[in-house]
Length: 591
Image (cartoon, rainbow, N blue to C red):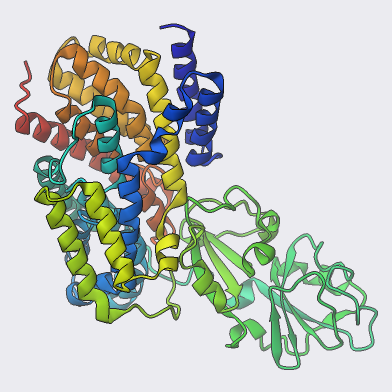
């Protein structure tokens, strides 16, 4: 290798470290890598930008829209209503989730499937008296397993297929090429879930995460003839309080929420603060602030049309991750106020403004009802409580399923390519009214798209500079020419990478290495490509390895080690089954 190869390999290592640290979003890291590679001349502009025109990526975007059509037409609600019902045991409840979700995830991207199911299962768990912690991990794991059933079940499958097609010039794999491997793995994986997880998962009751409103809110009043009358909130010094946060002002029977600093105070205003209730003495020392005469009747306990309380989990794509609540400026950014934070099933105590936000944190928010409609398609939040939401178009539910069946049928029969079938399905979802243009636009997960597109530049650099061949040689040396051992090493490498960076990035980085290795060994690339797809999807051991794990982390009230305890054995089991099935299907002998 010349210096370009070592530079590309070093850049890949830096990217892995930055992404695994959790401080930098994968799409930002890989976009930065793309810029460096293009500016340094290691890859051409066409190679750097090739990911943005890759057929696999465009297919992923189209399938996001198809999933939006199923969701907004009430297609998933139709499934939930007919299949969940009233199970008597934890295992029966898990079976009613895992089987339909796995099947659904085989034909829809599993991320929107899980996003749609979380609120339904959260409400259902209360109805049947089973803790959400017994149901949310099986929801995520079954969606992951279902994504391996077909080529369109996961964005990873489509992206790997697109890169395989681009690097080899072949036609790529068909929609059901992975099914011979994915189906037995999914069946055995779901059997393992139903056999072991009813007892292995924690039983954390779905108590209200934030307890009584009185625990973290307090009220004071503005003295009628005091010096604060006529001053703005900022001028009164109510924005600089260390342990308190002004939530709302009640005035003459109405409520001012998401209070701006420019709001002028009036005599007898009731000020509601969130934060450390022990700070009441500090607050009362402010000249012009007096105890509220209605302290025995907190205004937050009353229903008002001007605001609503809601619980929302922070998604892994949220732009406020890593910021403190004070620095995130929720009032300006979202028109909402954070009243409390729950993490790992319990409320986070301490100074509310100084809490640093993490993926999966569940926030208790106060906002106007319009917040719900604005944030429903925003990638920052996953709303998990029972709120009045926009009614699905139930009269188009069966139509949306019909469009999906047509899409899959055309691709399976070879009438249309997967790309064209997905584009046709997306267009029909919009034209038939299953989802609006706005809903379609908001359904596209932009960080995922950017991560996939930018990672192609690094993959091209590893291929062009000989770095991929070098790494392939190392793996070949370890395998000593044994094809089955090489297959196992590829699976293991991707599985480890997926736990520390995104599954799509891990898969795209490894494919050039796999193609160099199979070329040197003189064996077919397809079983190794499918091993990459399976390993990149089968990420169970941490909440960080797969997006659906992160999505259920907060709603299930889990702690990090809950995933390690049940997910690590699942990783090993699914890995052994996958390698065994691939070897059997493709006739790879141990010798």
